[in-house]
Amino acid sequence: MYATFNMLGSVFFTATPSYHCKVPQVYENVTLAPYNNLSSRLFPPNTSFPTDQDVNRVVPGKCSIVIRNVGNDTEDFISAWTGQSDGNRTELPCPEGRTYAKDIYTSTVVSEFDLACGSEWQVSTSKSVFFIGKLIGDIISGVISDRFGRRPSVLLALMVSVLLGIATALIPSMVVYVVSQGIQGVLNGFYFNVAYTIAVEFVGPSKRNSAAISMTYFFTLGYFVLVLFAYFIRDWRHLALALYAPCILFGFFWLTLPESFRWLLSRGRHSEAEELLRKVARWNKVDVKEGDIQGVLKTSRDAKALAETFTPLDLVKTRRRLAITASMCFIWMVNGMVYYGVSLGTEDLGGNLYVNFTLMGAIEIPAYAFAIYAVNKIGRRTTLIGTMLLGGIGCLVSGCLTSDVHWLIVTFAIIGKMGISASFVIIWLFTAECYPTVMRIIAIGMGSAFARFGSALGPQIMMLKDLVSYLPMVIFGLNAIAAGFLAMLLPETVNRKLPQNIREFDTLLNSAGLFGHCKAAATDSDNGSESFPTEDTPSDPDVDAKLMKNGTPAHSEDCTTSAPNNVLRRGSK
Image (cartoon, rainbow, N blue to C red; front, side, top):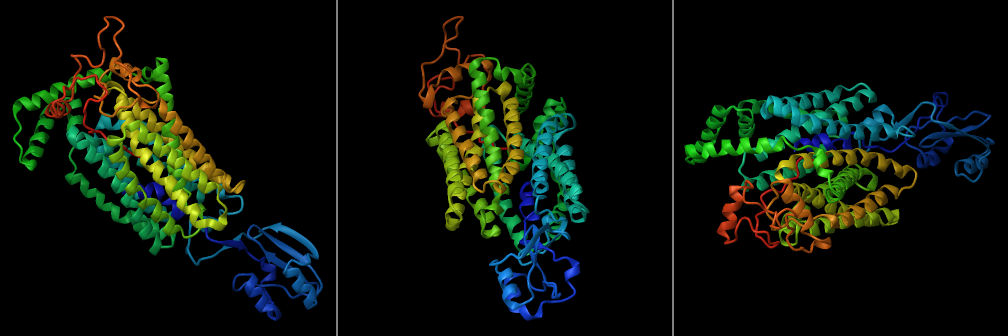
């Protein structure tokens, strides 16, 4: 939930109030009394106008002022103001900046640092810098947390992020704001990834689905908390304080959060791991036998030895692997681009920002529920294709509609958000199931990196609205549709045992045709025997036990093998 504040708080921090040019000071001495009724309809209250004999009429626009020299009689004056006559017209950029309305927002980054009329790029840059920082955080989080431990890594990153968030209320300039957003991105990628790792490492395989999904729903809950605070607090500095200051209580996690059991095993700290395991067992009122502990230790050593023998290059060494990996990376990139492009561009939909933002968050609840249900009933690939196409069509239609049907624009944008939210969940699961155990974390890390790249592109694409209003949503829609068609290249993984090694991975790629139709089992070219799976493949006892309970051999090759879905991963969006 805290991650939502980090990632989407800028929607309200950088909201753009209505604005117009300040009237130059030279014209502020005299109020145009004879024409108050006319001026009150055309300009904001307290706007001053000149009444010199050589009449210069100043019309303040949004990004420029227009000076018209006309006659001093009433008829000429009214003609000039109503646009029926220009007189001698001179247009100049706002010489003294802009005045921002305070009817909706008391203060925002845009109004305080005057970021309208050609300076909007600074706002979109700050959002992109955040996701570039998040990409860096994704990369270094694994290295540092593996070296120093999950617990100190996540808590230190979290507390630094909170303190930096509180310091946001004191930011003196836009440059400092952009830099702080980049640092927040690094910290966000760091603490979210490590927290997710702790969540899935601290539970058994059969509970990982629940652990991952709970994080997903808390991220969505953050939408509602954020918009509630933003609705009642209209000053961006005060909003930052209200969001971040209570989070200083995260410091108490130092007293309660344990180290990851699996990390302790990986570092050879077996006595600490055993003590932690016994502590958890006592809490759950479960007896732990010595044989169980030794079995876990051996499994951990074997898995580590296997994982150390592979690199990202192994993902693309054959044509099939290259095609699958390239498709996966593009799908990841599009999901990040569209999800955050639409979420951060909520204000550009028009209408009430608070209502639109709430709807954008609320639609994720049925999106995730549908994804969880459909991936088992319909299949991973079919559901991914369908949700990507739904997201693409929703965005495409939303972009092509005219402003006079605003409610339809918002409706189709929400439909697009629903589709892309569901596909974002599924691609985590799909990647985890498609790649073998020995390469799974590498594949997920690569996909996540492409998602961050896409997330950084999203705000920049939204800037294209200043050229052509419908262009951003059309780009989002077409890319999502293209990703949906590319998903047809992926193998179906529903009801299949997860591949454990490279040979099983290649067999999986060869065993499914286009549109999910299963082919005959591939054979090993050396001996003609079925190569997926092999008898010496280490298996997940949680999976095997459930399969045998259903009366199906755990090592069946048939596409209809009943395998449980115990890994529905989303990690850090």
